[in-house]
Image (cartoon, rainbow, N blue to C red):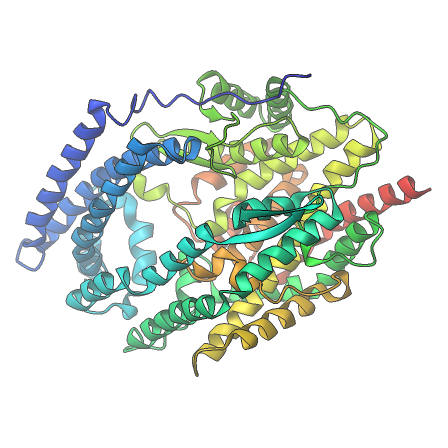
Length: 604
């Protein structure tokens, strides 16, 4: 029996050896001391020395944020590898009160910066150590008309813990404890929702449909609870919009577009172009159904793997070989990108092992004190694992090229967060396609591309359309479960058309993203990031030898520019006009053509 393929374990010891490492408590003690100093300085904010106090609090804020994030990242990394790590669970739990204290203590500074007149802000930013935060300050002040009084903001923050956030927690707890009955083979098996969701990636049609049906049956039994949670979360946000509309009207989309540093016009243009080009995405979805011999995919097929042809080398790819594939592809852009990939491996900053207690999924994180990145995934040797590794290394590269910037310039909106990751993924996918020696390998790669294309151009807009219509209706009253089902089905049909055999009416209940209490409209940034990254990729030939320098400059500016200014300054394109988005989607059309040609070849 062949030995199972796995990736390496990461090394966290350059940060902390364990939860008992004295450095953990030293950092928390230093954080406590700094927060006490902030507490004292807050008393001076409203006095004659308010400006000097604000500048000092801002400087302490970067130190506090760095210490808190460093310990939190360490606990999260440990829990990702071992979800039952008792020490990490305790450490993570102890940080909840620290985060609450941190948020309360820095709210007065936020109020000061938002409420001060332009002359005071100019003086505030005149301090060389505070000056780098200019973009964050000015961007935040665009929404200062929404601010409540300090006492009201404190009340909102306190009530939200057992208000809007409690509903999100309830949903998480329900999702974590919910069980369903799934037919596996010839037997009925009881399993959690997460385990059943894993079966949606099965290569068996009947298994996928059985899992989807079982999941929906389980959620249907709790549709009243889900509807109550969804209505409460949306109702809370709508009421907050009403309360914050004392100076001018606040729309429910104002917060998500501001957080993503884009304009409403850009968002509207993006969705308009997606709507105009949905026939291309529907064509890709129909081709995927054709590959399985179906007239249309069912909602249970959206995570299906490529069909098995049995005509070529399906052997797994060793981790070391995957690294070289990625390094070689990255190196075609610039040798330093290949060096970065190899450095990540040499320093053991990648976690790729398999284990029974590992959390699913993949992510990139980083330690705020050292500014060293870490990549997390489970590597088992599939081509999709290679692409996932390339994706996460793109995130790591993004943070790496920004490591010398001030903390206030290193945080970017979700709309730009996928720029380097999708770019790296596309590089490696093209490299894998070039080295493919069988139709199966080509199918696997092009299948991944079509799955991404349809997910971003059909599934994400479906979620966005549902959420918008739900919020519009929720202004009048809470919606009943059947109304939510009907609204969800209409959104599926509007975007997928006949490419899908039937809608998924309970998607509003089963999709976690709708219940994230701290974020609304956790959908359109995915579409934006996917297309923006592919648009950057399409400029490689245009910029020639200057591309890498332009690319790094673009990445470094993601934390200190709006998306529109970034695109105009580095690519010379306007994101609030349709041309950029249309050209990007047109470039994907060539890949859809290649997928269809491959199916023709397979079927001939």
